[in-house]
Image: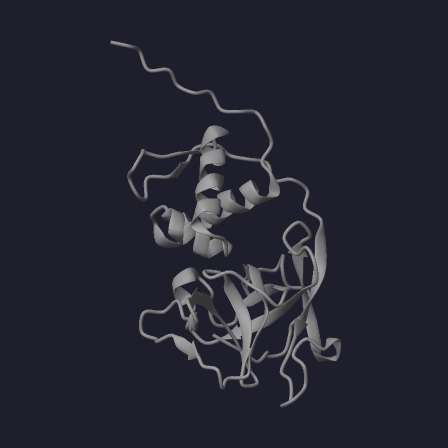
Length: 228
């Protein structure tokens, strides 16, 4: 019988994406007492499951986590890491807007939050979430979503969209000619977009900042108008 050979951890540094994934795994386990599935990790990071699976594989290769093959919720964080020195940038929080006023207008700024520059790449803004339609992916009432401004998104992305003058955060679903905005709350139903709707994607959610996190928030913002 062959003896098992344990793979030694790599001494390579974590990339920003790997560090963010490891932090998300740790936070999930602290909150729920179990390890996330790949799908839940993808939801927490607003990425596709194959990308989350690759991040998990890299973390395992570098010795930061261990898991049992083909078994869900077996991830364990087994190696501490020293976070890199993060460069933080201010992202504007855009508040309530009157009917007909563009939600992205800079004059609607009511404060700002500090976000890792590696995450908030491109033209980003933040909105305060009102409601509980995304609680199953830990986007809660009073949290801030940081959004990369873009007009297109892929099916499965968490987006901020404008429908008939109202901004909302939902998961985008596209199949054939059907478009839905799906909540992450089992009590709620999807919003089906019809040809008559005034619909536009404002951007993709790249991270979520808790109101309670003093690192992220530099000013007390007024209530926004983003509904979840």
